Image 1 (cartoon, rainbow, N blue to C red):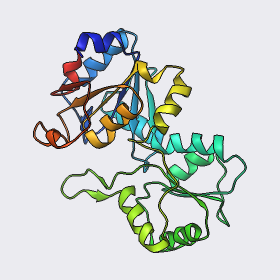
Image 2: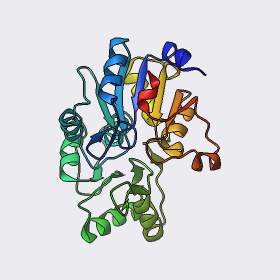
Image 3: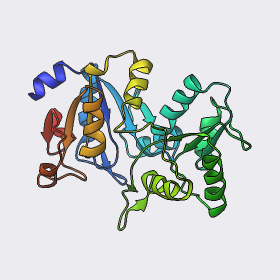
Length: 259
């Protein structure tokens, strides 16, 4: 697929965040100008992240601070997709969410949360995790509650040593409770793509996922039958991409090579 064909066949671009549009607090090249040109072409912009430790408002603040967020852009996290899924499929069920206080407050705007005898347990990226929280969540899982994880990432990229992420917690609870999630919502599962299709009213075949990770971003796009662009500005290199079965529609040095 050529860049010209990709642009013609795409109505909405989904962008991963760290490693794709910025590195920590630094925009990657002239990404601000690249996104502005896409908006001028009437392309929708959605920032899609698996990280469920922060709220939409927190991401909106960061993207605005570094000058990337534009009018009409959408931010979509795995926690937001999970809340929408639970609201549709588990209405009026008692729901317990293991998450930061800010994410719990965001979630509770649409899905009432319960602390007692939950019927649904949700594992998000809780960076305030304590042993007492883990013990309680493990008891709920052992009790047979429906078990949903926001995303499967084993680690969260940070300067120095990566931090354990939800995927690592999944392994912990598998050993302690004997349970694995009944459903994982975030990339590479197709649930987020299905939710975005409903939210935007745009067929997934007219969307393009742009990201730096083959096993999450590109696999997600392929699972959803989207166009996919792998950028080599983050985790994946030309050498490491040879070891993965997932094939993107295009491989570019960075997001700015789209235009």
